[in-house]
Length: 159
Image (cartoon, rainbow, N blue to C red; front, side, top):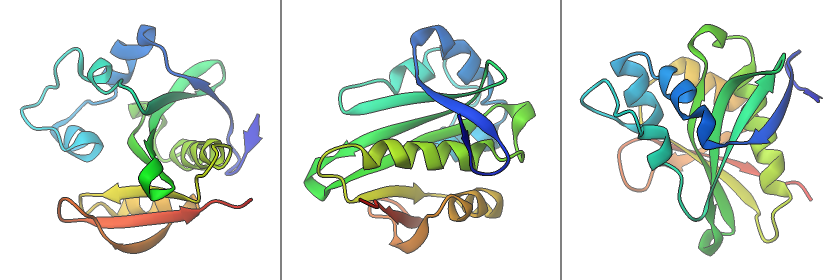
């Protein structure tokens, strides 16, 4: 168990049995847009399953024996980096430190991967709460996102 923000939680690999639960956390058009730039709310039933593919490792943050957050680590070998994506916290658990804890634990996992020097996050929207979470987790703004308007954040891997 880790305690970064007063939150006790463990990171476990995602499994498809949690697909409907994670999808239920996408409770509004705004959340859908924030998590995956989704349009046409509500998202399809298989949205979380569609995120699972080669080069992506998905995780759940477990607190008090219940899933409270979801996030992915995407392999960016050509960049000696990984990217964290599709970060979402249970609707009823937001603003309690779970997002920050999830990001720090995902960054720690990335640090264990051979050849990874940086952890990246692309922020494609103007949401001060999300940006604050990323900054609390140790990320720094490093420029603008590559493929769409937004910010690129980075956290260097400590070896």
